[in-house]
Image 1 (cartoon, helix red, strand yellow):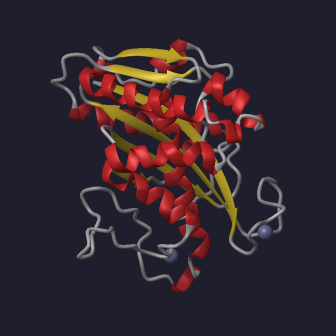
Image 2: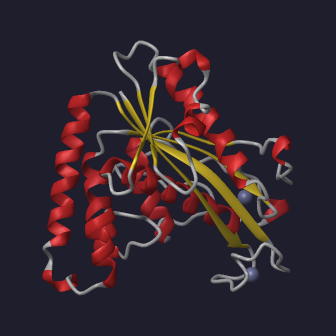
Length: 271
Ligand SMILES: [Zn+2]
Ligand SMILES: [Zn+2]
């Protein structure tokens, strides 16, 4: 089995949409900062190969479309593939359709919600990666081989990633792949969709009068109407764009857990 991982952070303002202050650490607005890591798990090499072939086809179809051939994004798309925060609908939608109809992977996300901008965000990512990997690797103790794949990013070294894998899982082979791999793009997208949906719920929450738990549905917990369409839950309306994006991943999602921020990282936190 293989695990493809990604990390991301988003922030929202509970007062304004859009908000000019949302990316500022010091702001008078009521901001929420969501920091998370995501995993796309494929259980067999056969599934991984099949996914690769299908995604490569989707990517090629986008690359030869003349209507968007001049788009500035196309140049980096051809080189690096999908990237959720940069992709306009003409790049994102074909991928999302493919996932919705034929997702042969399992998605896992761990995240925290903070009321102040994280000061040690890399420590927080490490903590979340450890939590996620312990959960996923425990499930696949009997797998023939275990590959843990991170995206090559910033000043990260292979050994800094290897340290995130607990000694219990010594068989796991850790590697760093360059940006542009389609399976890493899936991890990027499912994390983006999850954090955006969770952030939207924070934004729409009435606060103290809120009577519901902010728990995201996953494949095993989702409820469906008579026509087979998944039912919306919580604060986010079914016509909301972030609802649509997250629910496109719903059938592939295995676990989405909001964790308390570790006090070691020195973060304020919501209980
Ligand atoms: Zn604001
Ligand atoms: Zn609420």
